[in-house]
Structures are given as structure tokens and as C-alpha cells.
Length: 419
Image (cartoon, rainbow, N blue to C red; front, side, top):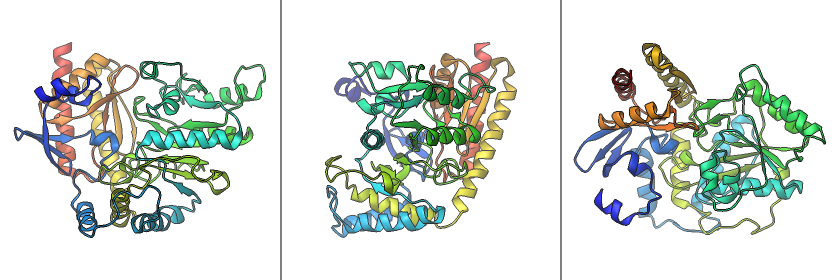
């Protein structure tokens, strides 16, 4: 790690958690320069839903490169973009009876959030946005303002403004419906809460600790937005693209967001790519009003189309994700029951599952020990107390079970040593 310690900025984080030099990867397996192999339950924090170097996607990408296809195209019309748009509409939007215009805001998730917030404010003429406790939406200034973590917001160097935070589902306990509080605050001119342009929400808070909002809470949230003429933005950057079993995390809930942000696994291959989906009546941008040099990621268009062609023409991947998600949850429940003194609990949906240790130091020790034994995971939550499991959706049952067995052994080892 000498080169990285000497030459790379102090801002690096993952290389501190996993101090080795990685060289190759395939599927759910990473290999370092020394030839040591790791099972990857981090998955680029949900960026590699189809695994590392997916051979089918790689073949399409190589073919495109060899054809001298357009690589950089600003927002020019290209064949790669045309084919992606046609496939996305035919395979994803139309079968789900979703009517959205597609905006390419820039390469990353925070670009999508910035564009969504900017558009909502322009549409309504209001400046304030409602975000939620423990939410995470990015670290550029606008999206950072909607990110709840105080230490992350503090790094901006200036006060973040234009956002009012409300309690997420179960933040005040399971018996309190926090959408009722939101409704009251927006209805009462004495509440001190300004009528916002939009509400931005994650159906499952990944970085916030794998907090899963109940379907009825999300339906109630949409109802409040409709009652007060407030736009509903669903940030599906981490848990979209199949992570919960359906392509969008909100499909089974019965809500209809006005704006949706997507990124991470959208390209299918780890290439930077993000989208903003906008109901047509809200596509009120003027040409060039939101711009950027890297809005035409043609290589990502190619692999994204390939992923849709290969994995989303039928329900086989969705069924597999739901089945594996049930298996993951049951195994984590077994681990929690075996370590009663540590008071672990489990939460998640589909193939995003969290093991809550209630103790950030304990969770960190588990992560470090797991890495030393060949399993890569990350912690989440305000205190880093939740061990987050994000294997590739395409992981084999054999590798998935091997990783969960390793996690079980590590948890037992660390808890026994801690007690």
C-alpha cells in the first residue's frame, strides 16, 4: 500500500478498510496481487449487481469498441443512446405501464439527485425540499444538503440550506406514523415548515442502516405529497436495478413517483451512468438549462442495453433475487439467534440485508476479521453499527452460502472474544 499512502489523498476510505492491492475480479470474487481471493458482499456498494466483468456484457462492450462506435458524445444523438432508450422503454417502462421522460444528467448518482432537486424547484417555484433522518443522497452541495449525516454535511465548509428533515418510517418507533406528522406540519402555518418543492425519499435507506420503509408508510407519504401539491422524488440509486427483486424498488408498493433517480448498477458493468426519470408534464427543462460534459456515456449505454436484453426480458432474475433474498435473511436470522448476548437483529428486502449489531465498534471488528478471512462487506448506519450484505444478484448459490458461512463463523468468533 506504499504508493497509495504516499501519493493518494487522505480522503481515500475503502482502501483503508480493505488494505490490499486488488488485481482481478470475476463474478462475486476479487483477487489481490498476492493471489488471495475474496468473496465480494460489497459489490461496489450496489454498483455490480451482475457481478465483476460479466462476460456477456463484456463481449458486447468489446464488440462496440472494435467497431469504432462513439465513445464521448456530449448529449448528441448516437446509435448507442438510441438503442438504449428504445430497449429501456420496451423492456422496463412499457411493461410496467410507466410513462417517464429520460434525462441523462451526468455520470454519477449525485448528478441525478442534483438535477432532480433543481427541476423540482424550477417547476414549483419553491426552494425547500423535505428529506429524511438517516437519508443519503450524495455529497455534492445540493444532494449533500439532503443527506442526514452531520459529519458528511460538515465537510461542505459552508452551511447546507434549503432542506427540512423529517423522521423516516419507525424513526420514532413502529407505532408512530411519521407521515401524519409531516401532513400536520405542512397543513399548519404555525409549524415553521415551509411548503416544499418536493419530498425526496429512499424506499430502503442503504447507507442509513438498511432501514426498510413499510409499504403503507410509503403509500401514505405519496398521499401527503398529493394533498399538498408537492413532488415525490424516489431515490432508487442503490436499491433499484433489481436489488429488491423488481427492477424498481417501488414497483410492488403501488406508488407513482413524479421523479426517479437511478445510477450505480444501471450500466450493468460498473461504468458511470445515471438517469433522471420525469413524468412528462414535469419535463419543463429549457434546452441546456442543466448541462454537463459527460452526459452521453455511450459505453454505459451499450452495457446497460445488454443487461436489459439478457436479464430483464422475463422474470427469472427477479424470482432468483427474491429467493436468494429469503435465504440471506433466514441465514442472518440464524446468526442473530446464535448470538443472543450481542442482541443482533436483521432487516432488509431482497438482496440488500443488514445485520444490526447495535455497536459500531463490534461491527467494525466483524468487518475487519471477515476481510482477513476472505469476505468483503461494509458497515452502515449512523454509528456504523449495521453490517450490510450486498452480493451480486447473479452470485451462485454455492458462493452465496460460502460467504454467509464465513460471516457466521466470524460473528461467532468476534462475539465470543468480545464477551
